[in-house]
Length: 608
Image (cartoon, rainbow, N blue to C red; front, side):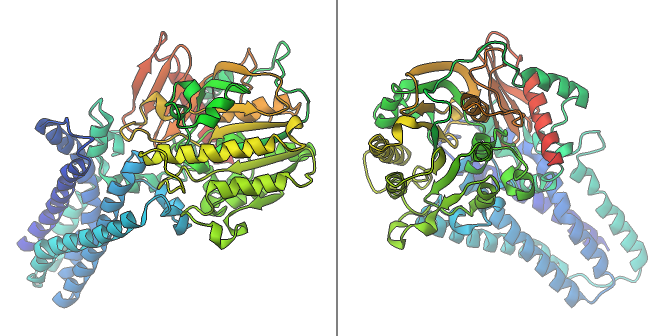
């Protein structure tokens, strides 16, 4: 009996030790990010991560506890086989989680959650962000990690279990082991307090990277899956009545006076160009780096430029819904993942289709990625051009056809007779990782890809200006999201979400700069008002030009959100359950309205 009890304890402690070792390994892998950390910082990361380590170790020890009870009643050979199979499964699970977590952190800046599994529905595009060498090394690393972890478990746990024999007093010992296994409920839950274990328990520092290092990726993944569909239970900051009252204050208000019109005609053609991963930092008139996007920078003087504009999220699927449906991105999921929900949203193409516009979508990649095609079809796009519509010889990149082929296809179509008015959307892809583009101007891969896409954009606009449609067309240029550039930028910094919004075209009255704070969700209400089309169904969208509406930039990231106005720039991390950035003349002024917006969003999401 004694050997079974100690084996159970040893199993739990070995899991904890295993998770503890993973933390300094993570920090050493990202040595550039943690180069200024002291030895005490490493100890603090380990110490503050212990509650999550203890919880996930408890989950993983429950089954061995039950297996030990079973070993009192079954043949040792059968028991040994069960233990070997279980620890092989645990080795596979933890090996994959640790390697994938380390690889993805460089791109996304947060520990592993359920997000990547959504994108794995289309593996080709899911792996397109990484080059071939990274993929090969990644799979080799997974294989090595699984092997080493299994050898560790086999030596310390499986081999010990092999020596166990049946006992004469099986009922008594079974009860003792059952009670001991039941005690694992304490670390799993996090004690007996009202608050149960969550990722926020690991947060202890004002430095985001230290908090991230303390998080157990297995726990982070498990927690995100557990809460994924319970939308009406997430982000409960206040009572329902309080949230409604607070949200009513920040909704779009009925205009009291006439709003200035930006266009020369009431129903111009509209071309929406969604620029992959562009950010304000690459646009010179917005304070960006000179020479990276010279064409877009030049165009800023030709149209209506919004200087305080923000992306609502960090991924394309969420950014597209924010742009087209005026629907805020969600920190823990993507509504595009649920076609039955996303099809119920309002959208710009739906509204324009009802107003007599023809519609079309151009994309060089796979439109099935992240359920995009189902969203586009349900929102009334007549014609969708995607990778399969380009010759095989033109699908040169991991994302499909590079952007010069994409714009060439659109240019060729615009030379043909189009039914007017029309709404066309062009979504670029070449400035996405791995930034594989057919030109070299900058050594930095991201900047080089932006320069390439900008050159394609410049040629397209120059060609479009020569068509019969230019005079009666407005072109809306906006990124799907910003980019983590430079690499050490975090979700707790303003520039992580700042992007350009520019409207040009022959139907634009005059160049203009608008400094009003806004985000992607406000494009729908603003554009539809200019076209004389109702936007009452767009609950979360505000007319940027309406002086009586409250104006702010709003964005979300994994389990966090931010709101910015001239008086207050505020970011709230839900895992840490605290404000992590608070600047301006009226600190905390945006905290309650931002919480109300997010709570209202999840209430709305649960009802769709």
